[in-house]
Length: 321
Image (tube, rainbow, N blue to C red):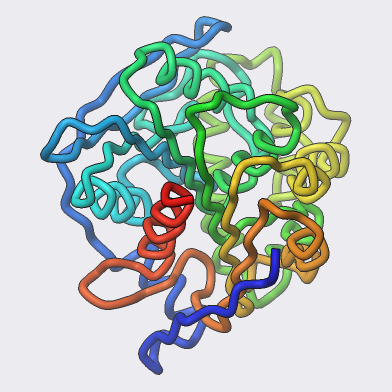
């Protein structure tokens, strides 16, 4: 599809990628009533789903996936859920394994390519036979999972009508390199602190799988992926994990109408994370590259973000076809 010309024009003080990213992550607040459902997975682990509903009975649902160390209550999740609820669409905010306030049962947890868990969530929703139209939206890591899920499968459930991927690091190696640069040191260190803290708790339950020496040697996100993410989830090392889980290689196979919104001033993304060639050669991919927005920081009027409005516009356009 032709590249979409973005109309996003934030106020001048939110044109700075760092400011828009930090404000959106630390300052923004969204009030939303949610109901939690716990589902048991095939491996007997669990996932927690946070539901919110339209005021009218709806046969439409949006499934929302968060980013690294996020959860179902993050404003970029609840903001979308609230907007869709107000437009007669139910929403479910997924908490990845270990992200709902309680550690999951297994040594392994979640990662950027964990499409199996998304498949189980979708099958769970579809089996209830309540929704005839299902939409997917992910932020960052969650967006990569959605694109990989759609592209690596020959068949997806017919109920899935559209997908939206926002601030997606579709080339994980490039994004990992960007996160280790000086400009992203604050983000890097914050992510690493949270990840290592959770891993220390997990190591106490599984001391035979992770020695104190290896745990204490984790100093960067890549070393975390080398020592934990890759080994716990069946990859050789961090590089193997990045290569096999990058959604970029699966984009050409996507048959579902999909909108990708990546800001040009997103400091987390490398040049490869802007899949212009893939979008131009696909009839299903729509790529929008606003000049501003940082990482998931598309601040707009009345606390409704630009990417949230665009997601609603996109599914409405798809539904009208």
